Image (cartoon, each protein chain N blue to C red):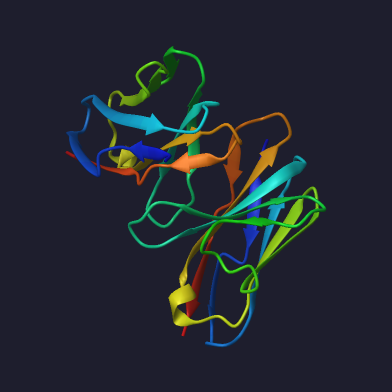
Length: 115
Length: 109
């Protein structure tokens, strides 16, 4: 149990385009979902925390207008990278947390390359 | 401020034992996690400690001392597939995970 999927696994796009990444909890309801970014050989960096039905809470330095997060249901959260630039190229990972559990279950990640 | 410290890299021999240490400073404390992350993949859960002591799970064990702000992950009978980064993360009073930079473990034959 506690499986989280992400789609797509990898994406290559042109500079200036928008990319949507989906994160789904397949066999449980996730009250909270987290979006992380990880650059090569660096630790995970939390971008934002989202609770179902409410606005996401962004970490300092993360542009909310550039990284749009929607947590429409207890099993789905989406991250849209708007007007992507090469510096946005990174590994984006979501995680989902069940109510009353501390553990976060991670999706497999999405590797974004912006040309 | 909040901080998680762990060594950047460690090397060990196949079949041996290795201990990866982690010290933490968090605003409040709701537990300490260890995750394993292979290159290019997302982290996978290894252990969670919230009480002092040793938790054993197969070849992996995790220890916590809350008074010392200290934890370690112990890996026994090392296998080549254990080569990965090991992430220590503390859960603060807001139930946010504070991540360490990870320890890259290199296993040599």
